[in-house]
Image (cartoon, rainbow, N blue to C red; front, side, top):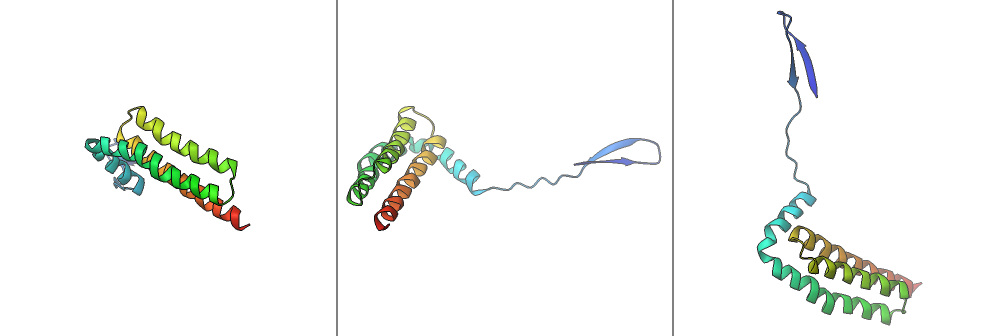
Length: 121
């Protein structure tokens, strides 16, 4: 926000009154961390493809199978897996790989919670 001031000589000038405060949100800190992990990109790709494909997706599908075989939950689980694999196979930088990997884990967690709730109802 700028303010117009006037001195006695008839000159007008503008004063910038904005405060320059650097606020680092959690998301910015997370993206900075992901950018700094570029040297460990192979580790994140391995965790995204093998870890998600052999541990997280299999566990989620197993829980869905045991708790009621809801087809929609199978589809959501497979889409979360595909999302993680596509980002890794596209060779995107870690600023994209890491958030999508964690998003897919959150989706798997949501599927597990939904399967438990559907089983109890």
